[in-house]
Image 1 (cartoon, rainbow, N blue to C red):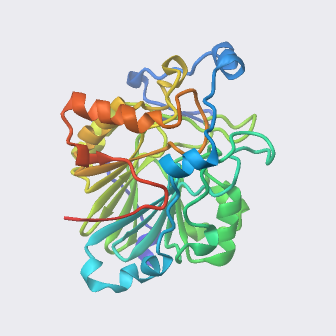
Image 2 (cartoon, rainbow, N blue to C red):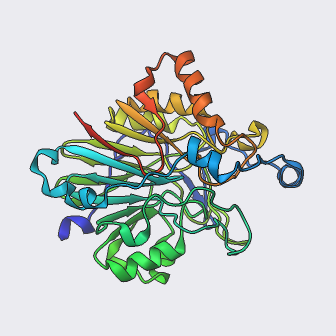
Amino acid sequence: FLLAMSVKDEAEGKEFLSRPLFARGVYAHPEDWGFEFKKITDMARWILLGKRPVVPSEDELDERLPVLSPDTESINEFHKQQEKAEMVHSVWIGHSTFLLQMEGCNILTDPVFYQRCSPIPFLGPKRYRKPAISLEQLPPIDAVVVSHDHYDHLDVTAIKYLANRSPDTSYYCGKGMREWFKGCGIPDEKIHDLNWWESVEHCPSLKMVCTPCQHWTKRNLTDSCRTLWGSWSIIGKHNRVFFAGDTGYCPGFKQIGEMFGPFDVGLIPIGAYCPRSIMQPQHVNPEEAVLIHQDLQCKVSIGMHWGTFVLTDEDIFEPPQKLDEAKSKLGVADNEFITVRHGQSNVWFQ
């Protein structure tokens, strides 16, 4: 399909849009964003002395953070129902992994299905809520959208499984990640590694745009920021969905709202934010998440990046509570920015 091979620069002639810096093989944020990495000594002190929350018992988790079992038959039939052609169907699988159904396509975001988000199978943050849908239960996936290469956002076992199961799947990622995906068995023509503001038409009714966010990349000891991080604006004929990936608060979101807003659905992180002295540059807190929602002009947003792994120091049940406080403070209606249960299905329409 010829359209899928063509990359368009959506920022051409628009000097006000931020672009990443790239020098000596390393990506960086625009200078005027003021992003600074925390000192290694500060990070080490937090890693050694930080107080991670205790994971509650299974009974308490099942009561307060249940994992629902989606109707996989209905998921597989969604695109066959003509009355739903102009709708968006979302299922929260866990953390930043969603199944999106829109414009006749099944889209998977930041696929993570393994039990530990770590390069070492027996170390690192352990999943305390199972994926609401297993890899085997997924419908045929048309597109996989990846925000960056951190282990809690990119599961090599999931990618290799999809490569074997569905060779026609297309993969959308930041610049520099092409070789990694090829190493997983993905055909070169199915990989679209994009810079901020570059877009590809996945099909005549759906365009994938790599858009800014404030984060970083690293998958091993020597590859810091050698691939580009990004958010994704998924622009359909009938609906627009924004996927933030992982991010601190930055000027890029107002620019995205000006370029592509309003969005029908926003998927925005609300967890992994404490302590702020360490996490503020790379992870928004719930109040900043609401600001992103407003910058993007989202009709409705869903909080993600919480309730699955213990990554930072806040209590695992705190993000939704803080989100409610932030909505009240910033004048956002309760039903405009919500949290959902693992496995919860939502159908959104204009």
